Image (cartoon, rainbow, N blue to C red; front, side, top):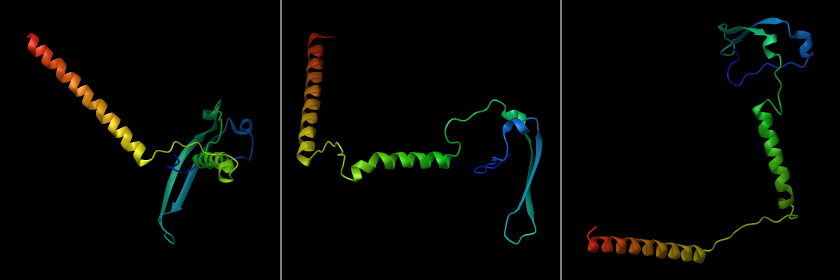
Length: 126
């Protein structure tokens, strides 16, 4: 099996020409430069297992990332050139303080109502 991050690709021929082939793959490499010790990886590659497989879009994650970055660049190009404006909701400190005060008032009111209901239940003997 190929290790993580490794791939095996070929564009030398059409699948129909090799679909009945079985390849024995032997890969070896030196783990350190100038080392005589070699690591190996061997496996069988049966092309028939790929019958009916098709891919939509890019197969490589790096190609997918590049396409996404290209899309972002194209989306932001008119904004960077000043041809398109960004819609933004801007809140000031006073807006945030006003909202915080409103939320605190709503919270206090809910607590007061809850406590009043408890008192009524206690008074009625429930």
